[in-house]
Each structure stands twice: as C-alpha cells, then as structure tokens.
Image (cartoon, rainbow, N blue to C red; front, side):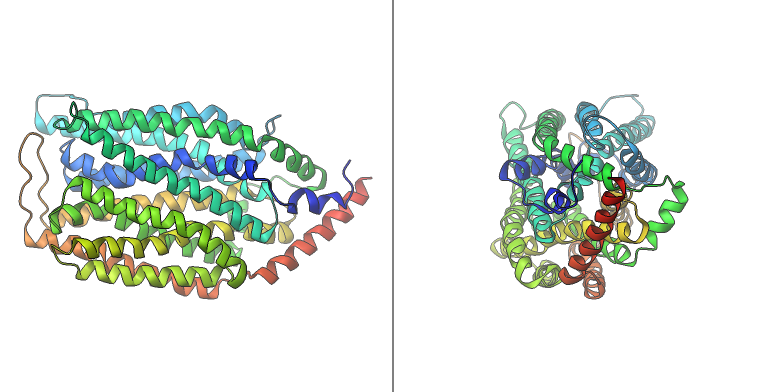
Length: 484
C-alpha cells in the first residue's frame, strides 16, 4: 500500500514527454472529425446533397438533442466503469472503429427516390440517423478521454501544459485535415465530381481519426494504472442518483462560470467557422481553396499561440491570458464585418488575429475544469470527472449545433439560394449577403463580450487551487492512515 508521502508525488509529479504526447494524440481524431463537420457539413448539405438550408440546420440541431442525453450518461457510466484498463480506456478501445465508420457514412448521398421531394425527406432522415449514431460513438471515445486530464496530474501548471499538448494535437489535426481536403479536392479524377470528393474525404479522415486513439491508450496506460490504484485507496465514494449528481454539479459556482465561459467561446468559434465558407465565397468572391486557406491561417496561429499562452499563463494566470486573447479576437471580428471584396490580404491578417483568441478558447476553459473537480471533491468527498466533463463536451456539441442551426435558419430567412447539383452557383440577393456579414462579425462579438464578463468573476486563482490541494492531501493522508 502506498504511504501518504507517495500520494502527492503520484498525482502532482511532472509528466514525461511521451505521456504528454500520447495524451495529446487522443484528441487528434475527434478534432479532425469535429473540424471537418463544422467547416464542411452545412455547405455539403446545401451545395452537394441539395437540402434546403433550414432543413440542413435542423438535421444538425436534432442530432445534438441526443447528445443532451448520451453525454451525461456516458460520463456517469465511465465514472463507474471497473476494468484492468481503468475507467476511461475501455470506452476508447471499443468505440474507436464505429466512431470512424459512422463518420464516413455522413458523406454519402444515397438516392432514395426519383421524386425530388420524397428523396429530400429521405435524405433528411438518413442524415439524422447517421448523425445520431456517429455522435453516440464520438461521445463514447471523446468524453472518457477528456476525463483523463485530472487523473494524470494534480499540478496546476502541469495541467495547463497537458492541455496545451492536447489542443496542440487538436489544432494540428484540424490543420492536417484541411490540407488533406485541399489535396483531395484538387485530384484530377475528383475535381469535377463533388460527390466523390466528399466520399473520399470522409474515408481518408475516418482512417486518420481512429488510429491515434489507440496510441493514446497505449501511451497513458501506466500512469492511469498508478493513479487509479491510488484513487481506489483513498476514495470514499457513494453512489448517488443521476438527478442528485446534477444538483451537486450545478451547485458548484466556479463550474457555472467555466461552462458559461466555454459556451460563449465555442458559440463564437462555431458560428464563425460555419459561416466563413459563405463569407469567403459569396461576399469576398473567392474560391473553396481560399476559405480552406483562411481557416488554416486561423488554426496555424492557434496552434502556435497555444504554447505561447501556456507559458504566459504561468506568469500572469489563466484569466489574464483569456482577456488578452479575446481582446485581439474581438478586434478581428469587428474587422471582418467591415471587410470589403478585394481586401484579400486584410482577410488573412484578421484570420491571424482570430487565431490569437481561438487558442485561448481551447486552452483556458479546459485547464480550469480540473480545478473545479478538485473543489467538488473537497466539498463532497467524491471525484466525478465523467459528470463534469460530460457537460463540457455536451456544451461543445450544443454550441456547434446552435451555431450551425442558426446559420442555416438565418440564411434561409434572408433568401439565400441553395446550389443545385449540376447547375451553376446562383447569385445571392443583397439580403443574404448582409446576413452573412452579420453572422461573421457582430453575432460572435456579442457572446465573446459575455464570456469576458464571466471570466472576470471566475473565483479559482492559482493560490485558491493550491489551498484546495493542501486540504485534499491532508484528508487523503488521514484516510490512508485509517486504512493501515
């Protein structure tokens, strides 16, 4: 049995590079699929599958309603899982291949009927079914993965470093996926066939999304085994009903601030990403490759700034970093709204500015969550990583769904004209162009400002977290002595 002196070292010790790399790899696949879906799925529905924008947005919203159910359920089930691989790894191992398979099926356009109306409604239900299945397996692999963070280390700064590795892989996966899509779309055999372009894209991204999940499991298995053994020695967990767990989670005031900050950040991210293809193509008059390049500029900047912000955070704290990044992003959003056709160079400057803020939207809320979990453990005597991370993942998906649904709904109300396969792109009316500009600038600006207000009042500083850890270590020491 480990003695009390071993406990802080087991959980607070520094992680080696191989463990951090393996942990980061676990977010590569989910990031690839989430990025491709957020960038291309709405435009795929309206410009390749031939669905109305409102119907396309509704598919995304309906599929996410299921996530409101499966995220907390998977979170609690993974908390209760007992196996020789720990609590989280079995979900990642057995969910990985179905996760990739159902991602691929979303990029097919089956022909159900020769009648256009019947076929459109058949496609509507097909995409809903596939989206529900994909989101189920996405949750099964990604939610247990995210809950690994507090199980690998309790060190305040080490968690920020670990989070930077995670989102380094995440943004790297997003960048790689866009580069891959650009190459696939440029292949001579596929260049004039959008249906084949998207199906090949879906197959390629499915393969590169599945493999890194197994790397993550293999590379973190030893650390997880050690910390799980320690957790079982010192835990005093009592099984609580689902509604009681929710009550405790939402009575944690710092958690409410974190989910508010995260929801605002990701509403802005997803809204901007989903409307950028329309903004670049219809307002700026540029090509599909141009909007891919714009998003790559955002994500390359985000990737670089992740590690910069991680170091800055050690000196000035998480809240200050969040304010710095968001301020630059807000200026960029204002610039996008004012941008005029022909100002292509300025478009890339604004994309880089957005990348400064997007990196903090990745880094800061996720590095705050483990601190919140420790406060909950101090107050309740239980560790419920799965429940807390379930609501974070749920909010990410809800933000994505709301963003895509609102973009589709606003475009439909503004008179946006969908593209019919085999016909030339229509000229969009002035009302649709105005709606696109509002969606890319003022709309995300509002939620970013709300996020800044919430971040200002977030109460867990580095000093407060250190005090929480001291109290937890003292309590665990007493329990260990009682068990000896």
